[in-house]
Image (cartoon, rainbow, N blue to C red; front, side, top):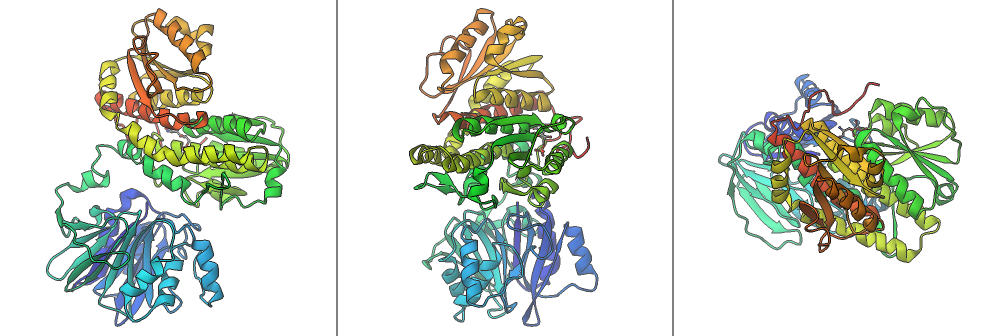
Length: 610
Ligand code: M6R
């Protein structure tokens, strides 16, 4: 995700800022920029692309020189990843500059208000409103104007702000997006969104908490609540090395990304749930309610994990929005002769937004007159650009080849779209509210499931040498079984199959013996009683059973070898909670087998060839 670095001291800030940005490169980004105070005015250099492109720009005799500056690497959320949308952003006068991580939820409303007051915007970003709000609130002091501006802002932010009107000051503010102050040599202070950015200069940092801000000058720093009350903060000594920090202290990106899921799910839902109306508000779904109502059929397409999320979306749309929904591998769809027309909505799901088969499938659908909605994580990617409209996941960069946080966000994005369509069609407000409430509970419930990590590691130890695994599920959890099996096979190289549990008796049951671990996903849903019979069938043949069940359900205790309890939720959301332990199981098995978890053999993160 985006990265922030700020510096105030007595050295030229530019090399320090660029060095800091480079330390944040591992997080993923699509553009970069710096603003520096030079001879009393602000100089900004920014560009789409990598930091090397920014360095080129700076190296071209263009580098500003000054000892106060802020810098940013952007991972696009509002507006495509181009130079214009790169941070820092400035106000109308060019005297206030802002670098921002997070999402300003009420940016649209604020922008309209500011435009009516005469402010001119230079970018499509949500961030730019902050610069104009500060300009509007200016009363002689940067920190006061920032406070006044932030009172109007809803959403999440980590901010580094500077102004030529208050030249010896940097302001940092945090709500929902990490931010810290680095204490450098005498009279040097840093702002960073991640300790990796300042580690080469200092190991002494002060972490800001949500709702706090800091004012930095060459004489020191002060920390406050956003409302102005002063707070004392502890200075911490960082002991990690850089490599450990890039992975947030985790051994692998995959584990980091699994653990991030409560936060990424919050980000996917941020500002999109309407509790009272029991529906979703999706800014990227730019077609009118009437057009949405005219959709008669839905085809969902994608590959791998994204296809699994698509299967779940198909079930949800059919059950809750009462629309016929088919789900197709993109690689198959593109070469069929599919029947689609202008009343067909094709949903293309892709984390990367660059998968060749998904792209070809959506192009084929468009050529035949269908409308295409993208559900994509990477903003400005090809699928995002070529879709008629879409939903971004806001899950942040996914670096591990095995998709984890993108999957749970895809399922939630599909649930949001189902809510929107369902409420336009047949879903009652009470049903809608029930789904909204269940979605709101989800991040905390995922946190609870992550607490099972130690016991799942022990299960992994028991089965790490098994040559095969079966995963069984029914209804909404058949796709969960497919996803669990895919995770295991791609990172541990163990052969694993996901099956609809009742299909077992039509063949695969012949594989069951005491050497076959069978993962059964059996939450208390509308097919629970059916799947318990399948558990009996496996038990009768000596299979070793790992059952994912709803907490408090002890019915299978004694019949199965291991119980993994997950919190109760509505049926369509059980896969989100059930998938997390399966991700952890695959992860621990792969680590114990000595596999390269983040970069498994023969695989690429983004499959851009056919
Ligand atoms: O970027 P996409 O979501 O389009 O990628 C699709 C698949 O290649 C991807 O999900 C793949 O199956 C992952 N390695 C699964 O973990």
